[in-house]
Structures are given as structure tokens and as C-alpha cells.
Length: 389
Image 1 (cartoon, one colour):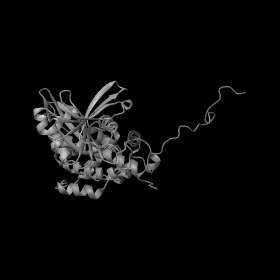
Image 2: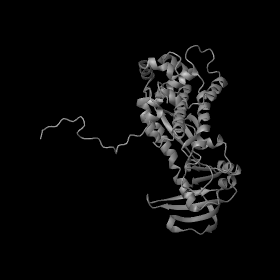
Image 3: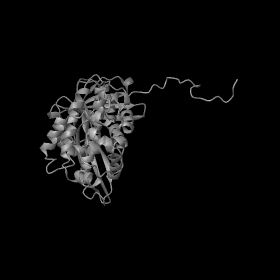
Image 4: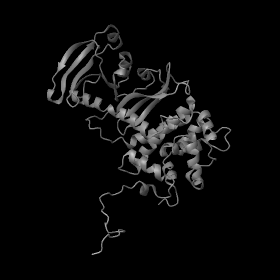
């Protein structure tokens, strides 16, 4: 039993504090700090994410209203919007980036047994980027267009549990495909990408690292068919071919054979051409792998709707990256909590319950317990009768 402890402090119990202290020490985050530590900063920003706060003033007002409970929730410094703003501005965002990676390393094994519905033992990743539009006059460092600023969130999502394993935050001008130069390929893993990542030199680097990719071909991709393999057209697969690229540049960039799978999705009445360097899995599995790429789109939609990464509490690059990385760490923390407490509810439901119970002094499992709507109450209970018989 966790009698007398707030739900917020029980959630924070799932944080690996030794890892947090290592991250702070690595970048000297608490150097010359007397009152408001990096952990106080993290707690304030995590509170803002979990309760959907809109501004620094909002965070300050809500936390000060809970002043008697703050010490037992882990807060040690005095809560002030100016102090929090300075911390977001000056303390190295890499503290929270490294800490989010530490949480990811805890979360991934918890979701290793998740079923993707595919006959595969390989790790499957989806790679994509999402643009967050900003005001150019407020964020002049976030170069995008002449009249608009933006940051891009480049994300590699492990589809087992939808855990982000790699995140790179750039200004809006960085093309998506350039992230492949930063990515360290995992041998044996599948990387699912859309047409924006079609660069044969970079794809060949993936193949040389013994990683597999599934990507949509562009309409102007030039190739020569070597072999055609037997397919079952009733599954939607139109053809399964071994090809060689014939474009002057593409043939030099990717000199090895590729596999081309043409697939017709009757539900949306659309035909897709996929390219892959894997010749062992079935052609239908290739199509199903690409269908799972949609999970990364849902991930971006989810975090934009339920976490605070579209409106920012600071205007500097450091403040923006700090807020995004803390948001990611909160997402992963809730995913860890869900698995370790064996909660069947969705992440959305857990976040909604936490948002209204954070400072209640109740066991966390009781706070997250599912309400049984099937139980019928006695209609006569506490009900006055209009007419007496």
C-alpha cells in the first residue's frame, strides 16, 4: 500500500534515478545551482506534460496551489516561472535526451514479446519525420522557409510497443533522407520508409550493414527485370520480381539486385510498388510490413495531441529541445508504468486518469483501476418518488 503518497510521486518511482544522476553529472547540470536542481526542473516539466499545462505561469500557479504536497512529491526547490524559464534556457538539453534514451532501454525489453501479426523474428522499425510549425519572429534560429520557422522530429519507431528508439531534432530545412547518414543500422532489422527516403547510395549502406529495408519506389525508378516469381494474386500481390537498377546514377549507387513487389490494396483502391533487399520473406509479408509503417504516423499524431510539443514554454533552441525530450521521456515512462503494473488500459486512458489524480494520496493501482460500467445501480437509491402508491 502507498498510503499518504501522491500518485505523482508513485509515478516518479519508476524513474531510474541513478541514470538521471549520471546524465546530470555528465553535463554538469547542477553546477553552481543552489535551489532549483535539474530534477526539480524535470518534475515541473513532467507535471506540465501530464496535466496539459499551457504556459510557465500556468505551471507555477498550479504547483503553488499544491504547495503542502510538493515536498513529498519530490520537489525541493521553490517553484517560480522565471527560475524554470532560466533552467530551460541554460541547462543542457542533452541531459534529458540521454535520460530519455535510458528510459527507452528499459522500455524496449518490456515490449519485446508484442505481436505484430507478422511471421518474423526480426526487429521492425519505421522511420519518418514530422514538422512542427513555429513563428519565424519568435524562433528565428529554426530555419525553414522565408516566412516560416519549424523544427523537425526525425523518429525511428520500434513497432513492438511503438517505442521511439532514435530521435533527432533539426530545423525544418534538413531533408528527411539526410537522417540516414546519422542512423546506425542494426544488422538483421527491417527499416520501413516512405518514398522521401529513396536514396540508393544510402540504402546500399544499409544493405552493406546486413540490415533490410522496405521502401516505396518512385514512378521514375528505372530498372530491368531479371526474374519473376510465382505469386498468389488473390492476396493482392500482382508481381514479385528480382530486378537490377538501370539508371546511370542509381545503378552505380546500388550495384546489387533488388526485389520489387507490386501490391494492390482493394480497401483503398490503390497500387503500391515496393523495393526491398530481402529475398527470403513472402511477398505478402513485404506488403504487410509497409502497412505497419502507419504506426509511426499515429505516433506523431498521438504525441502532438496528448503531449505539449506544439506550443513551447521557451523560445531558444535549448528550451525547445529540452521540452521535446522531456515529453518523449514522459511518453516512455507511462509505457513502462503500463507494462510493469500490468494495466490493460491504453496510454491515452492512463494519461487522462493521471491528469486529474496526480496529487491525490491514493495507491496508483486504485487510481488507474478500470470502472466497471456494467454494474447497475438501484434506481430507487437516493431517489425521491414523485407519486406514492
